[in-house]
Image 1 (cartoon, rainbow, N blue to C red):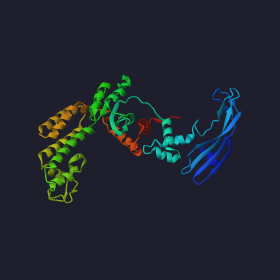
Image 2: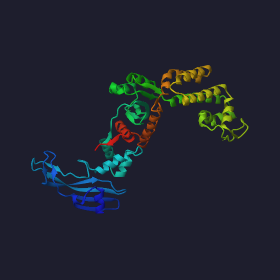
Image 3: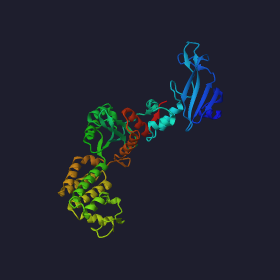
Image 4: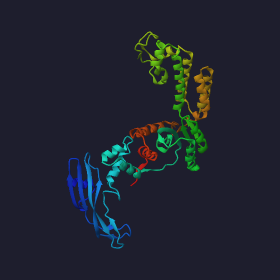
Length: 427
């Protein structure tokens, strides 16, 4: 046991004057006295071996799984023969003025790199209080500042009511998926204050800004990023078009009796219409269960079912064809032909007297240039808000597992420390 303790505490036998190990069922106490050595005075730098006295220090040192390990360290105080000041003996167990060993601190910080670990779980594992783990994290979590990325993604995530600011603004580098910063609010005044604090030279490094269709982001980007192209993420454009189609489908569905086969098919098999047809096997039969009288068979291919449902209403047919057409434009267009295709698409939308399609036409005309910009590519990758959506999902894990954070600065530090590769431990 003595040799095991020496190895675990990273000691050499020559470092020890005395070592006594006392163990119980769930705890190990290592009573350690180090050998007398020359110590350097922190005040004047002189070396001395004159002992002033002893002090017993108890240090938490969680090394062994399921066994709480405690160091009882007989620490000497030395007196400098030159300046007559006293100072404590140095040791390999703990940083100055800390009641936990350096190993525990490193273990705490390593565990908190996992977004799923909470402060409470870490505290239980290392036998510390939650407040002690929080203090360790606040002191030793390091985040390395990075320069503005070439392609900046902006999005928001619902956090907690921190001074009545419900949404936090997330800034992410699209190419590396690393978080540039996490801001406590997405309000225009605070975003303006934040970006104005960054030098113009740094802001001019940004060539693309990708966002959803939130007008405030566009207004701020135009002011503080004059050399950047503003891009609208394609997912949000398709989301709006799918929403318009769903509105048409629900309107048509409600025009039938709720007990009719038409109503039931439009409700229960709406996924066949909503999903992009390129992602469906149109010729693999599906089971209609008992809702099959309209097509005279229980098993039917999706292509036949789609054609049957679209034949019931002109508006539904028009909305479906326009939904599918934009999905094709989004998949196959380039930055060279996107403008021509979108102009033609807007013209086709206006040919139909369907209010939902006219709404989409207005949206596309308002954001046309930003949508066209999104077809540009950086290092072969199309401009997209996908990286920030992935980051938001992992931030949500931190928030959910922690049951919310009252301290936004700690929440921000936890996000940057746990999710960024350039984070470090300040020792």
